[in-house]
Structures are given as structure tokens and as C-alpha cells.
Length: 178
Image 1 (cartoon, rainbow, N blue to C red):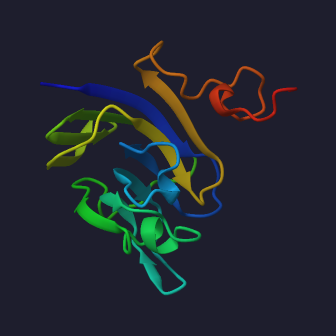
Image 2: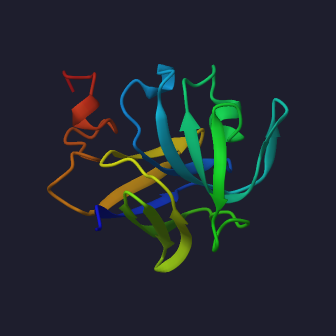
């Protein structure tokens, strides 16, 4: 019983930096400070780094986040330690970074018991477990000039709508005068 398929284009439109972009399943507003938070993040990193003693490996991965984040999120999200637990590495991109100035078509198919992620039509992740529905969020972690374009489903999401060109989606736009 399929819950959903979401397809989007994503990439980093610069040659500067080498950090993460990806998506979250089950994240709710306020979860960064919520001690009862429980959601998953799938992200992809261009290059390996050590930041503040935390290892951030190249490649794609799925992590489960349980609890409130700490400070700047380095151990939790960067290293997938602390409140984060790595569930799986990608089959296709688990040990490979994304390329500069390249847009990828990413398709996410999920049910309450299975998550699949495809990059440009090739299977990267196929994991069984217990996955929250229906919340889906796109995100970048410390990576400037990340570009996301929702491909499908259209008309069922406000994701990415920026009617006034200020790079802030209207659903969360604090700059109401622009």
C-alpha cells in the first residue's frame, strides 16, 4: 500500500563548499527543540570532513533522528551521532559525492514500511522499517546555493512557491512587505 511518491530536482549551483542536501520524512515544525522528535533524514554530501571532532563522510545516507538537536547540529546531523543514528548508506551514491553545478532528478517512494530513493532513475536506497507519514521536507545543511524544484506532485504542496522573488517560500515568508 503505497503512501506516496515525490519527485524533485536538486543540486548545488556553485563550486564552493561540499556539504549536505536532502530531505526529511516525519519532521514537524519545532522538532529541533522537541525531546520527543522522531524523524528520518536522507542526505548527500560532496566531500568528507572532520568538524569539531565529528566525522562527516562523503556520500548519501539515511539517518534516524530522535530527540532535540544540540546547538549547531554538528553531531546530530553532520555526523549522524548523538540523537542521530545512521540506518543505511546509499547503494549508488553511498561513497560518492554530488558534482558541482549539476542538477539531479530524485524520486522518493515510501510506504509505512519501505523507503526507496532513486537518483536520475537509478536506485540509491531501498530500506524497510517503520516510516512516518505524510510529512516531507527538503533541506540543505550548511550548503549555499542549493537548488530544489518540486516536479511531482504539483498542486498538492506549497513547497518552493516564491511569488515575490525574495527566495523565501510564501508559507513561511516573514517579509510580508516584499
